[in-house]
Length: 104
Image (cartoon, rainbow, N blue to C red; front, side, top):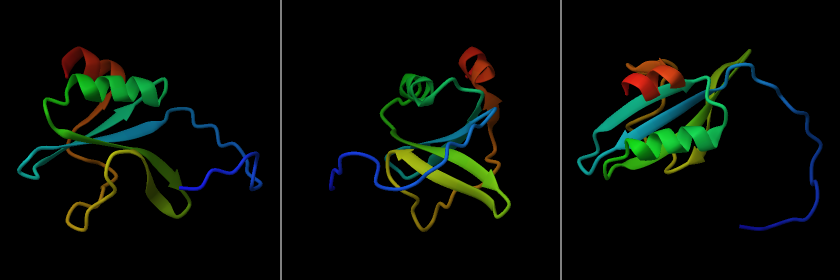
């Protein structure tokens, strides 16, 4: 890693009304439990939610980004995608954060 002081590139902010975070729990056998969290205040809230359900599993968190080219995932925490488990835009479980906290 290299740390550089100050802004090193031109950029623009993208405001997202309803960010989508993808959380994957991976157990010791390689079994993956994917979740999509919609409406989280920030990544810290997502991490709190994930840690409360971790149960010894590895956590990976990504931000889902959609544009004219399709869906992409930006890894924020945890391991990157493995060849046998590329992310999908709509995993089996989808919940707003409020539903996930209440019922998850």
